[in-house]
Image (tube, rainbow, N blue to C red; front, side, top):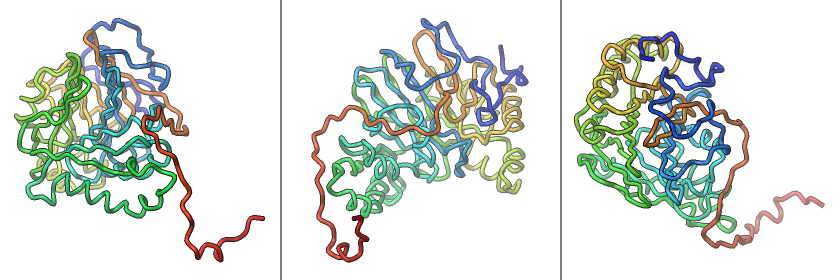
Length: 380
């Protein structure tokens, strides 16, 4: 089934839909049967597999339907590593629905320092350390800037400083190492390997977005690969770095008229936003034709039935390969045999799952300030 049958697209998840927004939910021939809907906790990732979950498909303004930017990758290595690419506002809330351990969520790759791509880093460091993420720091990889204050290293140090009260308040019951942030900054202008461990390799490459200091990432593991654009205009560095990946998740903004109508922006402002910093559906189609992924993923899209149908109609003018319009909690399993796209069915109120603790830390009680003795109301 090709993209021309746009009327066959499933209903949006926030409107009650249960399927991924695609006419090709299965690309290839899976070696096992996948449930039509992904249920967290009921389907362990297999050895040698990648499972990609969209934690945030949305925009600078988070909504209940769309969190801001975030892509989670579960790696089918013995360590079952979790890698996060961007962590915008609302992404952590979606992570909490997946029944995955908070202890394992400690590797974050930032594409650029717009607030909607890193807003939940404070929550990951400051708040999840209170509910079980106790083994050690959050490690953050990201690009340099055109000057030091615009780079990831300065950003991470500033976030640590901003969390000073939070960190001091956790003294005693919380492992102080778990409230640390450790930043690794790489030259945004170069394509280079920035992470390699446990069979997984992450390559950073420059992208064109607003000003210097934005990158995309490619993940390789066990002969499988994922490309992620972050926010980006179409560019050759991305095409060269991601050529032939199994899945390419590339941003795709609505046409300017649709963006203006849906967001309240003026047509002039919407046109500037699209042309100066983002990718139209036709431009995304050109990128997909050059990269030739097994599955193309559209991301960072303002979702409504009207906008989605408009995007598919414009995209199909240039691209007729398998494509999925990602939503929050779209799940993509990648194996050598197949790429399978589904939506997750989750519970909105789950307690955190700490996971197996590897670091020994004994909580202790800190003596209270002296003035509390007169301020507190006796309970007896």
